[in-house]
Amino acid sequence: MTVTLINNKDQEENDQPKHVVVVMDGNGRWAKKRMMPRTAGHHAGVKSTREIVEDCVKRKIQALTLFAFSSENWQRPEQEVSSLMELFVSTLQSEVKSLDKQNVRVRFIGELSAFSKKLQKKISETKELTKNNTGLQLNIAVNYGGRWDIAEACKAIINKIQSGELQTCDINAELINEYVCLKQLPEPDLFIRTGGEMRISNFLIWQLAYTELYFTDVLWPDFKSEEFSTALDWYAGRQRRFGKTGEQVKPAQTQQV
Image (cartoon, rainbow, N blue to C red):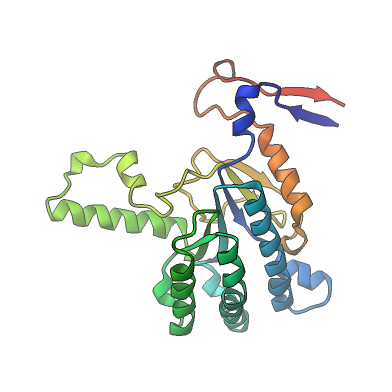
């Protein structure tokens, strides 16, 4: 077995990610394996979500971004989408007070106008109740797509150019970064996808440029604290170079055990 250890004290503060993003995949397959309806998997997945949020609070991770519903998920069976919408409402209603007590600030990213007035109201109430909290920044991506995010940023920049506030020559990566979602947070350090698929599925495609990508076969309802710790340990052993050579950064020391 190979264990990666970091011995340099200067790197210890970088062992834990500031910003973790998660594609919570495998709810439907979890339910199918148990001869249960897919909706049962989504309900089971809420328990994992609660546990990982609480872990992030305990570990003092700055931000957690969860991919709850993509812009492509509308293509799923109508009954499943309807059940997911009901689950969003009930989950926000049951969890928001606990999140507030834990000093968690909740934000939502995505095209929220597509949702029912009832769900939009719950989203607004959750944001309002937790807006002054200073602990974990919990971002929930709903009706979100990375291409939509970039397109919206482009439209906002074009509007600024047309109004004379910006010029074409002002456009660069730093400017675009000011108009995409999550601009107020550190760029994601660690991406986790459960369920065995090895793709990012149109999630934060601008923001993930230098993110460490971690894939696991564990289905989301089975992804608990132990699995999260495994992902964080894996991250701690990564050498993040950001374009530099390995010799330019302080390397991790790998040992065979």
